[in-house]
Image (cartoon, rainbow, N blue to C red; front, side, top):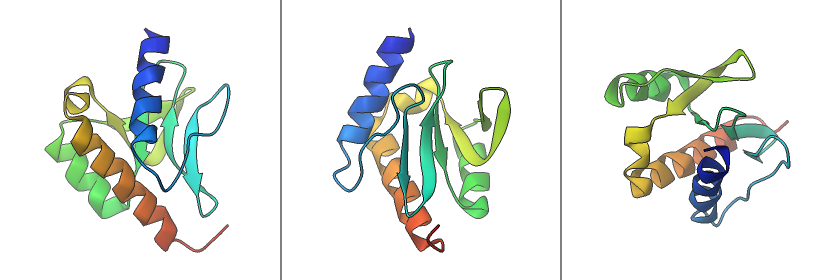
Length: 107
């Protein structure tokens, strides 16, 4: 299950030419000094958004805050199985997340 989900995450990130996957044991994407997507040991994908967008997406996609290694990741939403049925939409969310972290002050 984990390896299958990791393939999905890798394929998702590969559709975005402005950034690449990082991390060997904890896959993630980052830009401008900020992580903006994560893949946890449970095989779940989390994507980071501004508080306003996060609130909208929590309701729109009937999802929850993302948890990784027992911690709730503030600003991240859990990408559900239903969401993964529309990879183009999830690619759009990942690109939106990248655009968001690029507006933050560089770390």
